[in-house]
Image 1 (cartoon, rainbow, N blue to C red):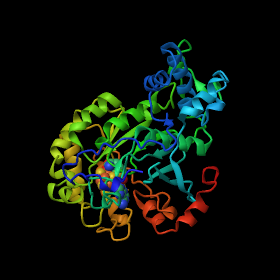
Image 2 (cartoon, rainbow, N blue to C red; image 1 turned 90 degrees about the horizontal axis):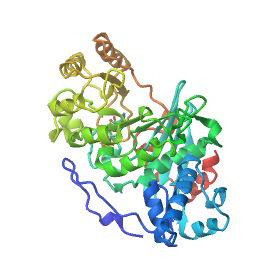
Image 3 (cartoon, rainbow, N blue to C red; image 1 turned 45 degrees about the horizontal axis):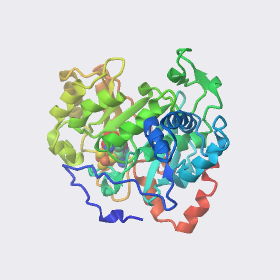
Image 4 (cartoon, rainbow, N blue to C red; image 1 turned 90 degrees about the vertical axis):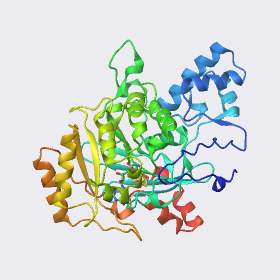
Length: 416
Ligand code: SAH
Ligand code: SF4
C-alpha cells in the first residue's frame, strides 16, 4: 500500500491538485468502474480480444455496469457464458467500501466510505417531498481551509478517482434499490435511439446530485468531469445535467470550462459580501476576489433565468448576517445582472468551530431583505442533525469509535 501521507500537500491559497495514480490491486485485476466505454475497449483489446470483439464487449459491459448496476460479470446474461470467467479473472466491478451507514429520523442517510487504499470520505442522501438529493464528495479533505467548514480543517489527502466519484452514486442506487430492471423503467425520448432514454423522476428516490460533499470539485476537474459524464450518459446512469449541481468556493479560472465541458448547474459558495470578511472565512478570496468571481458567474455558460446560479450563504452570527450585508448582497447580484437564487444555510457548528449560527430572527430578517428585492432566498432547514449530516462531521465522529465497533455496524449496512 503506497504511503499517501508522504504526498506533498498543496498550499491554502494556491493549491495544486494532487494527482495520484490509482492504487493497483494486490491480485492484479483492474477495476472497471469510472472508465468510459473506449477505455474499457482498450483494456479488453490489451487482454487479447481483437478490436471488433473488444468494442462489442465493451459496449455490453458498459451498459451492465453503469446502466443496470451489475456488480458481477456472471449477471451479464447477454455475454457468452465462456466469456464471463475470462472477465472475472482479469477485471473487477468496484464500489467504495461502506465503513458506516446512518439513517436519520428525518429520512436523511449518511455513509462513511473508504477508498481501497484506506482513506475515509462521506456521502449524504437528503430526501424531501419533491426530490431526493445525493451529496457527493470530490476529494478526501480539502486544500482551501474555509474557516467555518469542518472539511477545511483536514488536509487534502488526495483527489478521488472518477470511479470513486461515480461509485458514490452507484452505491446509493444499490442501497436505495434503484437500478432499472429493464427498459420498462425508461422514458424513451426518441424511439430510434435508445441512448437518449432518461430516467423519469416519478417514483424515484434519487433524482438530483450535488457536488457538495468533501472537497473542491473544480480542483479535481478532470476526474469530476469523467465521473459526471458517466452519470449523465443515457446509456450510463442517465441523470439529466439539469438535475446535477456543482458547488465551488470560487475557482474562477475553471468556471467557464465547467459550464462548457460538463454543463451542469452552478452553485457558488459566496458567504460574504466584503473583502475583509470573505478573505477571512473563504481564504481563496485573497486570490480570486468577489468582483472577479461575480464576473465569472455572469459569464457562466448556460446560466439563464430558467437555470439560475445558486449563491450559498452560510449564516454566521455577527460575522456576515447584518441588514447591511443583505442589502450589499442584493446590490452585487443586481450590479452583475445575475440570474440568481440565494440559499441561506444556518451554520452547522462543530466542536472547536470559531463561529456560531445566526439567531433565527436574524436569518429571517436577512432572508426578507433579499426576498423583498425580488431574489428567491430560501432558508435551508438543517437535515439529519441527529446523525451529524454536515460536511466533514461523520468522519470525525467515526474516528473516535473502535475499529471493531465500526466493523460490526458496517456489516449489513448496505441493506439497512
Ligand atoms: N468546496 C465546495 C463544495 C463543498 S462544500 C464549496 O465550498 O462550495 C459545500 C457547501 O457546504 C458549501 O457551501 C459550504 O460552505 C457548506 N458548508 C461547509 N461547512 C458548513 C457548516 N459547518 N455549516 C453549514 N454549511 C457548511
Ligand atoms: Fe473546501 Fe468547500 Fe469546505 Fe471550503 S467549504 S474548505 S472549499 S469543502
